Length: 320
Image (cartoon, rainbow, N blue to C red; front, top):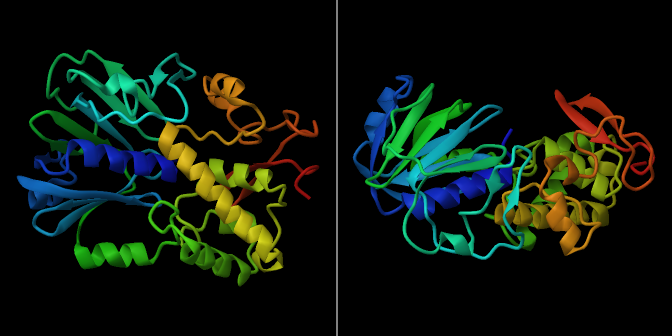
């Protein structure tokens, strides 16, 4: 499932490529035909993410709300050139050899527009030299948003609906703080208070979007390991200092994820080595998806269990 950093990057893409432009909206699949009609021909005015939720505003005071869920993804195609922002990490190849980040938020974005296709879901992949624009929709496209230069196709979301502004706010009010949106001590205090009043295990609280917005399976496992914290410890049994440290670590990791497009959670290597581990997703994490492999710190086998209907990875030796 795409976690908070991916949704913020999607919002940033829409802000760069769609906001301030007239948008043609359609539903090639047909399941969103009514909703598409409500925003068709309108100008996009704003794009924002809160946790795992994306909100796209239009000039008729309506919003498109999208939650990607387990299987959703946005495909951007056409001129996806964006203003250059120098990232903390360089472009690197993923497990398939696809270069991730080469043409987004990098100096290579400067220059003539290029036709390309970018898919943003849990991971990001880019394909250059896309000939036809706009290409015919492929597969079950729930909604297609089209400008004169760029098209965005949405497939497989859990939620895709048009909302009024008050409905958007009501949805946001159900969510815990998001460090990108709710920066500062007030957001930290909200998180601390929500955790410390609950008898629920911290491994469940970090996945509760009403407690903190944006954390998913990967970040949960990694944040708990980085804190050397037993996932079964009840929130109300944790020292306040520990809970505040969890929030601060999430602030740090989310910032890295938004800037690099990668859930990079290891901090045990210097910059040259860090660039190397970016090349393979399996090397970027301490415990996630490493069942039976030796802990990178103590050598004890990493275990996997089901917590909250999702797989949890942790080290019983270091996290006790």
